[in-house]
View 1 (cartoon, helix red, strand yellow):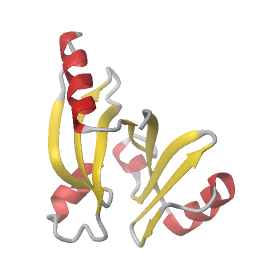
View 2 (tube, one colour):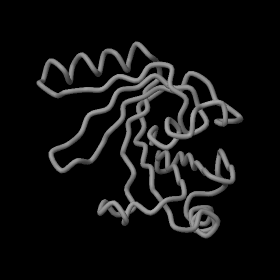
View 3 (tube, one colour):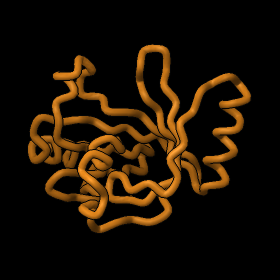
View 4 (cartoon, helix red, strand yellow):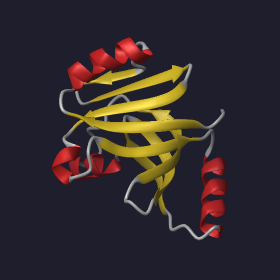
Amino acid sequence: MDAAVHISLKVSELERSVGFYRKLLGEPSKLHLDYAKFVSRDPEIHLALSPGLGHARGRGPLSHLGIRVGSTAEVLRRRAELTERGLRTEMEMGTDCCYARQDKFWVTDPDGNRWEVYTVLRDLQDESAAPAARRAACC
């Protein structure tokens, strides 16, 4: 799998936003009451939408940015490269987030924008097994 850019947005009305992005990117690949994911091939983009007001935190609607890679080995390789370049990373292996089990790490840019480099180990149908605080913090 080639690397792909991932963008996660907090939206004020999920249903309205899903309607907009359906027109822009086509049908969502995942659709839940509290989450939608669009995967577009042209252009290649992975867009996640979840309810929430980022504006209330002074951050605008951007939740985080990400780069999806094909394997845990690739996650670890990229982490080693960034650590060698002097960036501080936060590991999260086997975490349940965005209706998927993932291996990932996070880096934060100088303005506080968080980037994740991740791989999806498997899709999940339900996130309810994860504690609410953990689910809220994953994205």
